[in-house]
Image 1 (cartoon, rainbow, N blue to C red):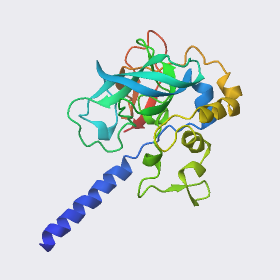
Image 2 (image 1 turned 60 degrees about the horizontal axis):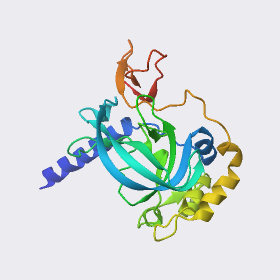
Image 3 (image 1 turned 135 degrees about the horizontal axis):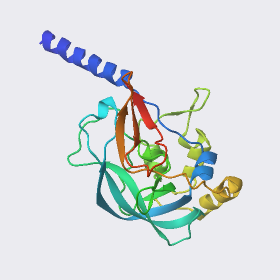
Image 4 (image 1 turned 180 degrees about the vertical axis):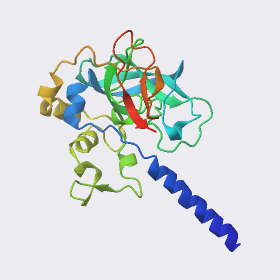
Length: 250
């Protein structure tokens, strides 16, 4: 029995070592950046979710063997903030795992949209098709499309800290969290006053046009340098220079 316990503990330690070694940076944008760099910003609800049939490869050591597919998500604009009008339906492409869900360490930040639920969407147009995608797609979709759910933010065990390491509430952690909190009530209703406050506070950023080259690629492939380092590039950048993006690993 002791031998089995020792083996189990060794496996646990090894697992954490793998996760620690393969930790990756996450693209986190402050509220001003989200407002300035996004082409569309709105609080809306999911009307429908369907597979698009479009898959992509994403290179990272702990994602080996995982398949990713873009979901075609119809979002209805409830409170417009930038680039849209109330009532519009925006086709939004969100990354998902293709087929049976598997355990992926340090996975891409996926949203997993549900019909009827509210989200704050900060989007850019896709480069190789119609519609839009999260400003931080495809590696960190959930840093540009946020589920608006107070219960999710304050569930048992949820802990938040400010820049000084002091434990604080979700909405006290930073400007972005405060804005998200004020966009929705405890029952999931989107609050017009919260959207109005964002439009007023970030008016300069909202009024900033987005460069035409600010697009999200949906098809990616792996490139490997002579030194063994690997990174992601668009599979078909239409003759332009291939921008590196996402995690770089060896």
